[in-house]
Length: 158
Image 1: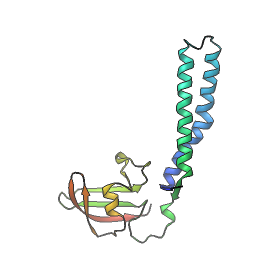
Image 2: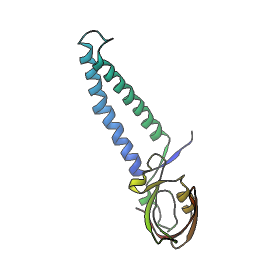
Image 3: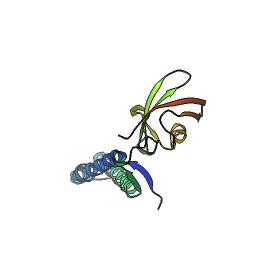
Image 4: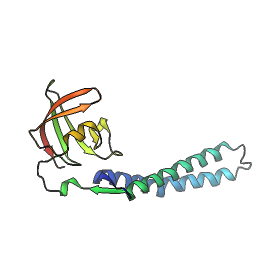
């Protein structure tokens, strides 16, 4: 089975969602289905069909999370030796050499990536170009919009 990297925070968030689905949402939907069945004819019972649809969504999400957690290689970046080298999980501040714009990203797994929270996928062009580099290095990123030159301002293991 192929493993996928995931940060400790990402694994904890998925585990919390899984717990909520199993302990709170699943029993609530089962109760809604039971209540809707008491109303009689199931063919024309919109509450019953809505509850069954919600149950299907919950069960699908539970399976999805269990699969992701089962195939995850959880990496706690805070426990790794701080060598200054950019690896999965590090938080990197880079400066665009053309515009002097500074941005900070954390390199995370595909499922955790969220550009609004400055978390980029390890498979993104920027992350692929940064992996293995050190603080102070210049990096040429080949992005879909063209090539961009960055300087690595800092590397944090947080």
